[in-house]
Length: 272
Image 1 (cartoon, rainbow, N blue to C red):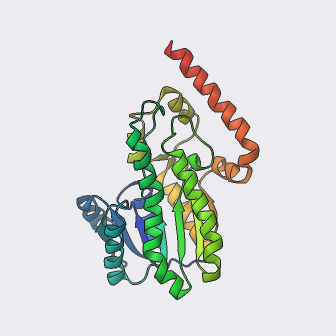
Image 2 (tube, helix red, strand yellow):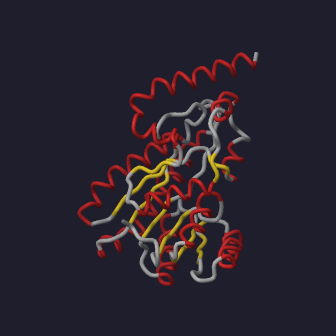
């Protein structure tokens, strides 16, 4: 079992959405929380808010872009200097921009891979040497339900989250001799600023598919993540749909694809 009390928990993408909700949950359990995000002004406001709510364990921050490996490593070092070695890393930074593959800017595909997958790699690499030398630590990688089944309209995003799942599965084996735990979480559609931004470019069929799924709150997802960390679960889900996909994705794949095709046909009829 991974204990959060007095653990140093570092969260990338921690200034809003799931990352912010998770920071609050970990702080309430007595963790020393560090946040990394690009927007320094938002980080300052978030830290002040969290510390006003809970003055016993101060939240500290550093601004960095996770796609810049050197800048991210410097930010992690500064946080380690203040909060001690990282006990739990949550590689949460990421974003999605839906759209049809033929109309999305070609550079977007590499940008999504750089942010969602390589940004995770860079975060892991920044904390791993210390974890290996201490033979302790916990890595939580954030994938998505769209990393379990390819979703219409997410050709730039879904493959990056499949890659994160594959990374977690590989690290689970590599890190076992070092007593480092690995978890991978698959959030469903979650009520965050990121989901609101996605709605601006979703194809009609994608919106229909999303409309059939209940949107979860960031707090719900964060609670599931805390439980997954504490219980050292490899696969972590926040709803029954995600749990079923993790266990039965091979069997459920044909049904999920049939359901998506039905929504696509409906959107095409409505567009005529």
